[in-house]
Amino acid sequence: MRSHFFAYVSRMRFIQRWALMRNTAPENVQEHSHQAAVLAHALAVIRNEKFGGHVDPGAVAAAALYHDASEILTGDMPTPIKYDNPAIQSAYKHVEAVAEQKLLNMLPLELRKAYAPVLTDVDPEVERLVKAADKLSAHIKCVEELKAGNAEFREAAAQTRRALEAFGLPEVEYFLETFLESFSLTLDELK
Image 1 (cartoon, one colour):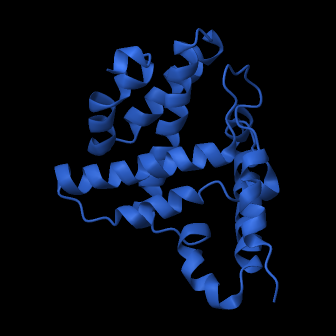
Image 2 (image 1 turned 90 degrees about the vertical axis):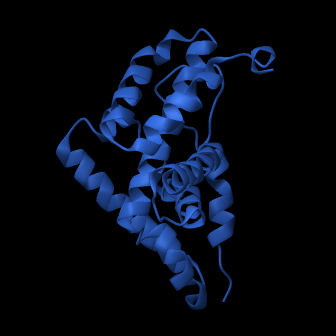
């Protein structure tokens, strides 16, 4: 059986994020997924090392790598539209679930069990960390756009910050206090 799964996954680089916003630096889903995986891994490590957690950072990172994989088939729906109306949000969740299952079914049968936990059946604790990392990635994008003088991201920065605080996760607060400021610095200032 020939599988198109990885050929589809590699196309994440063609899906642009922030479509309704003027960007100084375009971002695609593949770039975002990598950053979300790095951040999710960090949140899991912080949880374990600082707050006594017992979550597998590798499983969290893998789930984050694939958290937007359905967008290969659906495209990226802008947040203001996706969350504006409960009916749209519910319908889009259903469309995402169908797309995730379609991707899973592209894999040879013997590989599906290994990919199901990152595509269609994510553990709730892992999913919460991935959602926090996803929002953290969005907030970092806003911070970087503001640093570049793009006021278009001012409200998005405030909204994503409020959403991060609403998670109530100590590892998120730790990350914000310890690492976030660095994203607003220039390369010379990072020395």
